[in-house]
Length: 113
Length: 114
Image 1 (cartoon, each protein chain N blue to C red):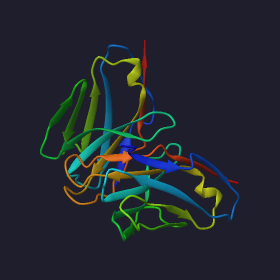
Image 2 (image 1 turned 30 degrees about the vertical axis):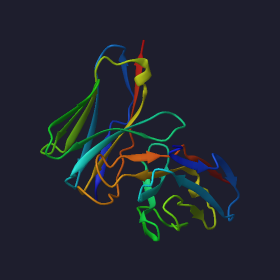
Image 3 (image 1 turned 90 degrees about the vertical axis):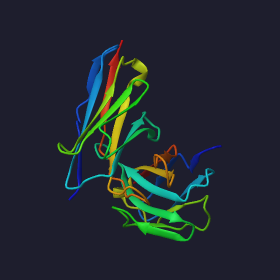
């Protein structure tokens, strides 16, 4: 199993550009989440999904869109990039039972200039 | 609002000693609490989960305690090794089932010196 994969690893955008961060998992998890991590702050939830076709907002959703057409994929779209969106983005999938552990991808480091 | 506090200062200890990291939470009563390890440039990795009705949980050299009265969890690494150097995150979860909108602490960086 590849686990959770994210692409790209690094990205530089200009203010106002849009892009999609890709996330895929091969563990058949129903739950998937997007987080951002900024220096000195904990992971903050952007959007999440409890199954294909179902998404909802997290703590910091503004400026981001998601969709979940399959169990495997959960892309995050930046509509019009702003310098405040410079961050490291992590996608995670999680189990519905047991330890509810979140499996994180390797992250995407995004810089908006 | 719900808040998680972890010691923002790095914890420096000598190899072989026990490292103790603290996670304090306010304004909610978690059903369980998770601990994760994060290495530089990588995503967090799950270590342990402790439920509200458990006082202590152990896994190899790791021990976690959960005091719902003090609203605190302690994370211990015994016989610490330089390979244990990393940032450790805690994440209390409000519900026992279903999807939890986890709130992560900012983490405590542990440095184990030979």
